[in-house]
Length: 126
Image 1: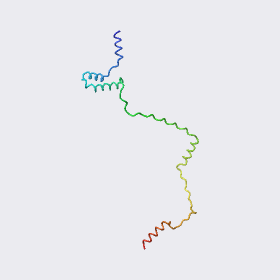
Image 2 (image 1 turned 30 degrees about the horizontal axis):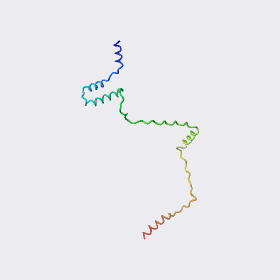
Image 3 (image 1 turned 90 degrees about the vertical axis):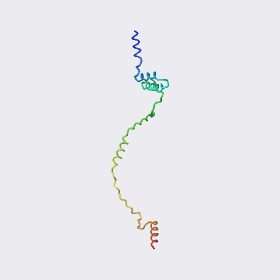
Image 4 (image 1 turned 60 degrees about the vertical axis):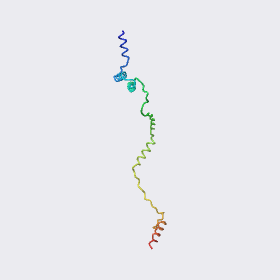
């Protein structure tokens, strides 16, 4: 019975990682002033295995929750008909009607400003 209880106790203990065991062996051999980097490596490995919680904050950006897209409204028959009418008119070119400006007086004389400029140019000739 003693063998059964000791076997169960051994099974309950989690098996140590090989790299973790190597680091602990190195720690025993090193002097006090050189243990700090090895302790850091041991703690890092324990965090990787999930045996220890990290004291560091998680790196990276916090992701924002995306806003839910509003669901599209179902289109009514009226809106579908109006869209069909618009689509039917697209691409068609209406004939341009000729307009007669019979009520506008058209003179062959240039505008007043232009006549003054012409007179000034003429005055330099003489």
